[in-house]
Length: 324
Length: 273
Image (cartoon, rainbow over all chains, first blue to last red; front, side, top):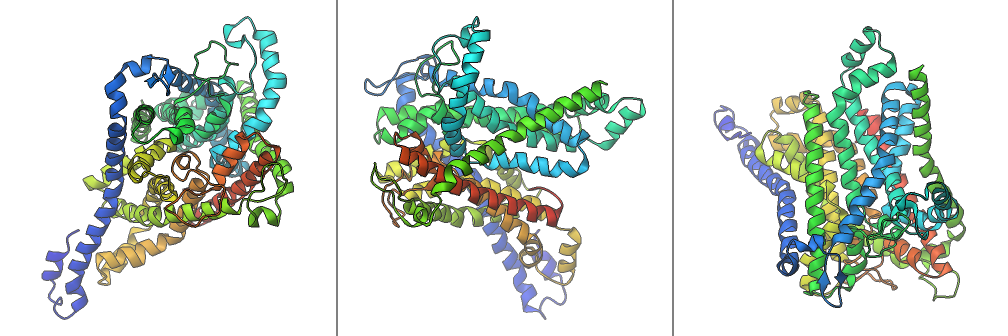
């Protein structure tokens, strides 16, 4: 890295001025790059500091009871985030239920079974789904998905599974279930593409060994490939969970924005990201309301950092080849 | 037998997975294309109750906000990526890489709150510039990781040849290594621009949105994704129409940029970025 000594010992250094300057050029170049590389860590520190600083009045006022209290009243300056946390976790969990098997099925099919010519096009189409802006999913959800769900799917569920408390009560269009379904569509391509990369990283010898022992292709998948890629696949699912937790626009447009905990999935709810999206521009500068919203953002940030950190660790471990 | 059944199940999964893209694109075209006229690009919104009108203010706004964000996000992203690739083993590179992953997984609304507390709340007014700052932060890790991955694909022999010819390290990096990877980096940056131009959440309480045409980056400004959100959740039929058409325009821009980026990188580097 340091060429200063290299050019000094070069007997021709004095003949060629450009070489003599190169050591300085390298130093300046490196210094500039270091500055650029420092921006990301500096931004992260600033982000964390600003969130903590901004949330401080709310942290002082409510402490940890913020997460267990369910009253959110900006006028009375009482803030509890329980229904928000509940809505975020419930919609994310419900979204993953169908998204995980679907996306893993697609990923396994594309890496192990699909004819060569359709692999890339299908993968590309699914990755284009990941490029669609969240607000467009929201728009489509409001005007296309919800009318269909409300007219046929929800009444059907209520008629046949109505004995379950989660399918009881009046049917609203915007609801926990509607938000969960749009989240399913949104996180699926994401899980699919990470899982696909993980499966592609499984050594071919793994599959060949299983098949040499007489396994069918499906048996090779279940006995040799998936177990090898297990931690990477779990990592992909957790990354998808991180996405679902932080997803804002589509959820805001479909969840119904009612600060309530209800047993019915047909009832409207609220999420952490949605409350920030809806209320932040009305919260006054320096008000307790904006501090409480910043507190919610801080919690959201902490959760996604934990979730993503864990997922990266799992994927990294698998790529290192331990596989277990 | 089990294999066959499972393949059938997986093909069904592929169909279910691809279906939303077709449905979404289909409804965007059906509902949005009819209002995709010249007026849409050149006029301002008509008063409530009157049909027609366009979203010129939002198109100008998106170009300015995203352009400003790219002006900051792309150079810093590329430089940080060059650092991580050139000084791979250094501690700073490891930290930066990890931090980039963390930032990449951070919800965009949280970055929006950061822009609000650090810029909007200190200036005491909403501004498009705060929105650009948030978008630049979202771009940075994307551009950085793409740059790093592409630089790592440049054959070491190219670098060695340049060094052997007496090129200094910085000239080797700039004129040989970076140049070789440049087409990929350009398309990777395009992809990042495509992704952030659809971002709505970080603009809600920074750029805020506006009904008027504005070129002042220090003031609230309209943007296409904000138009989709406000008009879709508003009560008027004309608004819904504008929302659909704005979404169609947005998606055309995003998809065209993404497809170009993917095709170019795949052709040149035989892999996805």
